Amino acid sequence: MSTATQLEHVAEAARPTTPGTDRGTPATGVAVPGQAAPVRGEAHAVGRVDEVPPGEGRAFVAGGVQVAVFRLRDGSLHATQAACPHAGGPLADGQTDVDVLVCPLHLFAYRWRDGASTSGAAPIRVYPVHESGGEIVVEV
Ligand code: FES
Image (cartoon, rainbow, N blue to C red; front, side, top):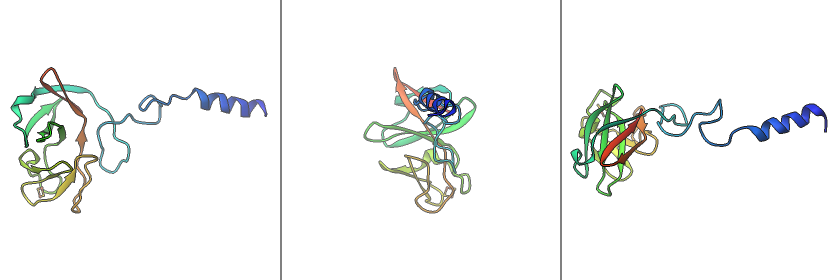
């Protein structure tokens, strides 16, 4: 093996394998429409979990970004952009199930997992969200 080849192997072995630590690879988190790999953002506490009744959504602002946060009946939290890309409908007022969010205006549906539309609309952004001490924390 040549010295150059050995260095390539050493450099390859030294590359970080943790998502988000590799210079060219974004961390997982926010699904950006048109990109396969979501990007993790800055965490913001936006409100109390009990402000969102089970099965419903509410609009919040996270770091200057309008988001819609949902608490499903199974207790899971989901966060998306607040306005529907189709015509600006209020996604926080949408109907939900375990897999999708349906916009209340024209009924386009979006997957929680990645924001892709299951009904032919442009995708929406979905953001990482979790509960911490009763607070909703959204990463934008
Ligand atoms: S504004 Fe959401 S489907 Fe039309």
